[in-house]
Length: 310
Image (cartoon, rainbow, N blue to C red):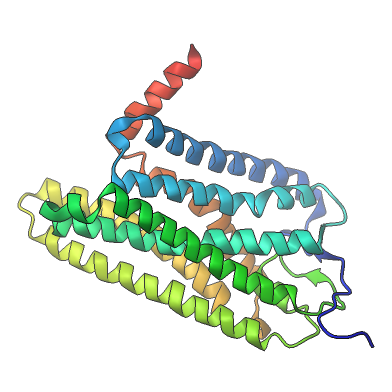
């Protein structure tokens, strides 16, 4: 018997997204178009915010960060999934699986923190408008962004390194369409107790705590909105808050559903649908919900299209 901390598995086999081989071409075209929509929509948001000076606000700065994370999240999963849809053998190397685990967890964990910061920005703007310039200055926004990206890297790095030190001696069939911690850990032939503990702690301290902070922020926002005179102002504010809360709820539900459950109770079909939600649907909806209602964004888009047509 060879010593521990040695990996026998050199590649993993993906079970895939669907069990109908004759529909693979159709699904490839569909998901390719959706992935292109993610890249195009979020890239346009980033370009518009960078080039259009009226969009150089704290909220737009964080929206640009969110768009970047959306691209990273989808790009960590979709390219390999599209490749496997066109292949009979749906495999990924061990190193590729570890890289996918890191990139996907990093983008998801960082987005959890970013959504909290965005809710805080709305809280300050609505509840403390006179102090907004001081509380959300350019320096503070940059520090907040640097902080959440750093925490995201550390969280992902710790969990990925723990997985890297596990033994994988077979079988090597991942019951998912990409490398995610629960189905990957289920294949380890060594103890995954520490990894499960760290995942649970990350779920509590990142997902649960930030969801609670977001909920508290929006509770104060709603109370302040109710005090606004005029139905139009209330309707616009409630529309913005409800859209944000919808995206937050979908995102947190999917993350909590996937990671808070024990590995032994992993449900393949349900988790595949949830994964599609936060790797594809949410990154498409975010630019629409957060930005396309903004008049300045539409002006910036018009300028970009006119420049591209010259």
